Image (cartoon, rainbow, N blue to C red):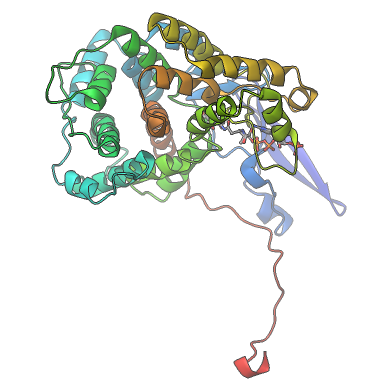
Length: 428
Ligand code: SDX
């Protein structure tokens, strides 16, 4: 459905189609802007007002705090579905039947072995290497062991690439953890389900039989579901942009891992816990950190707060906060960082600076507290985010390629030196 938008400049009038989405969002389609106006472009650092694509995968309403995947509310999916069920929905567009799910799960399990030579690459890293850097490198290395080009218009080839990365990525993530811990590497155990396998590969030691904890498994599954997709966030946009050059799915996801690592994005879950621990170590003076966050001369930001889209509560943060209370109670853990987090949230939400800027807790504010209660080391928090986000990266990459979208190549406004003549060294 489209209407017309008008742009007038220097006495000239230009018309552009206005597209209306299924949730009544409005977009001015400016494909012809530069051509029709003789060179005028838009300028929008950080793409705060710019849509990069049309998508059917995830709908966010930042003002109302709504998050839906293919029309299903995140609250329902997080509480009623399994991780792979939601992954199937996000990637293929519909919740799977029992038969579809069984085949999907079995085909992923066929891909839980990674080439033994990947261990040689892993050995090349120092033990202290951050697991996100290791994961990004090993994911890119998958291309070396799976060089075949994926014909995205072949349903079978696309499906094979999807089940391959879903099978192998958690193994690489677990190996990055084991490397960081100086622990032996574990292979997947296909008698376990997807989430149990991840936990087993991270924690099994050769000397004793692995015994899972249902509370931990349930909490991890819900956390990872909450991270699966979030429309055109920084790392997903990176996966789309890299994939738009027709780079492979593995190479595109490797780039997504690197983008997610940044502390302004997925790296915030690690930064939140480090911030909370620093507050505790400093005597628990929450007001001091609120003041630092508000001080324009101080680079400190309240990690886990604020969001490009949500100007209301991040629905995921509400679910994670609820789960944090339950998990710590179930596991009998009293974590001082949870109380400090709640106090910080209460002070911030009543402070004019945060209220005026509509800064609320985001997905990263409480997630680290649960990861820590589940025994996940802080360096692995963003790796867990990556494992959760993998289905979304796959789905968005697939949608971009299936729609034959053009290579991403933004324009710029040049403000550098105008033409000048070369001077020899002696003339300078
Ligand atoms: C994720 O996009 C996604 O969907 C991401 C994500 C996903 O699922 O993929 O949801 C995951 O990345 C969550 C965000 C995790 N990052 C953090 O928690 C880091 C702390 N938050 C900020 O750095 C910031 O809020 C961002 C990066 C999240 C959003 O930045 P924007 O949209 O560019 O907003 P901005 O920097 O323009 O801020 C607007 C104002 C500024 O003040 P003024 O210049 O107007 O006076 O709000 C202030 C900012 O200084 N501000 C903060 C703040 N966040 C914004 N001030 C203090 N502390 C903060 N956390």
